[in-house]
Image (tube, rainbow, N blue to C red; front, side):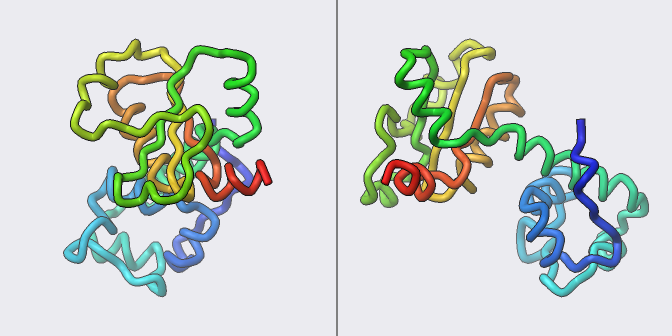
Length: 173
């Protein structure tokens, strides 16, 4: 299922695209190796058509569909802080994981979350693939990346807290 209300055109600048579809950055890098490093990067003022041309990508329809699919998936994988609180209150069995790196953990964590153990990836990869995993970070960006990573490894019930801890603490205030 894709979001038919999302419009991306070849004439749009990358800045415009990233405003309406933040997932475009990750999607373009994953699919075409575009935008992830200085060698394959682009300028915010570059149009999508120019980026495709610069990287020898001929199928513009596929590029646009890739962006729309990624944005739709990101939107489907985001969960509101109040929904997570309801899961915690109801006693639902799930993993609520704070993916901030240790240096970022000066701000308070979300109640009920556990810090990701970056040195024990097998702890998480050995979980049942259908287990509900909810990730949170400072603002929701890294947790979406982590959710995508787990989905790429076959996990089927994966979510990211929309807006991260900024939203979590704002919603509880």
